[in-house]
Length: 212
Figure 1 (tube, rainbow, N blue to C red):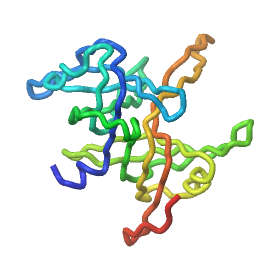
Figure 2: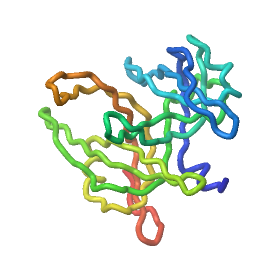
Figure 3: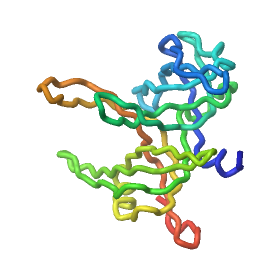
Figure 4: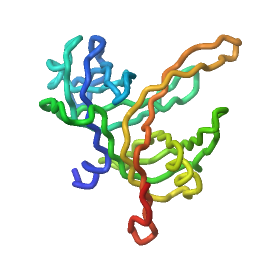
């Protein structure tokens, strides 16, 4: 795999396994499992994040175990009620020794804005901007990763055109929201996204021209 494709999508998480692994799929004879991890924020909140782990590493993911991992945030489309839904999961590449000095939730991606940014202001006058970033992966695949920026980062990214290459540092977060179904029922769902701490864009010459 090319060096660039190994380093344009890097995640570090340190947290606690909060459910039993469930078989997901098999690829080339290797089984993969889905599990959830509780990852603390620097505040008192936690994020409950979906993890995909190979059977080769599964022994580290027992319920209640604390584990530190390196991997990539990946996306795939899942058909639900005849509609395609973008699903995110952290794919584990390596289980590592925990480091108390490290931020427990760090993601670094480099990719391309693939939809026009959506800028809005909350009722409390907080500025927010949503972007979708396409990150190249091996075998001519791409991951489509939703990101959210706040404040000055939101102002900075809101007018960036589709196709612009961006470098982002942030954290993977879970967020609950309510959705009204066609029958009028309101259900609580969970969204996963990258909360942006720093973002920079590149010029047509490939040079970083500004960083926030």
